[in-house]
Image 1 (cartoon, rainbow, N blue to C red):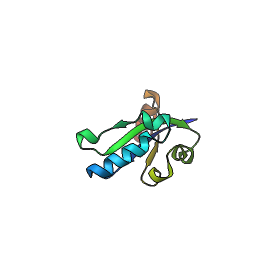
Image 2 (image 1 turned 90 degrees about the horizontal axis):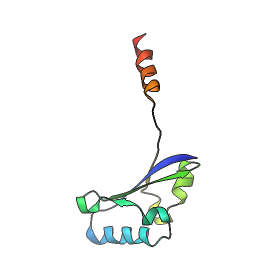
Image 3 (image 1 turned 30 degrees about the horizontal axis):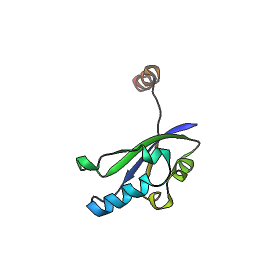
Length: 92
């Protein structure tokens, strides 16, 4: 399983924002009811992280009306050794 960051950008219009968030909160998805939102700070997006087998599988967690605008990013970790190899590859 891979980890994915799901971002749910939406229109800043007050009523549109409220409808979007209500849809997320009433979807029945644990992920959406525990999403973090930036709306009160003027960033009209919600975010959550989940484990899934693919981006398509991560997208399928969302209610159909939220899927088109969702941004899904596969997350990874780096080790210092990996980064040092990158620098080494560019020094030769």
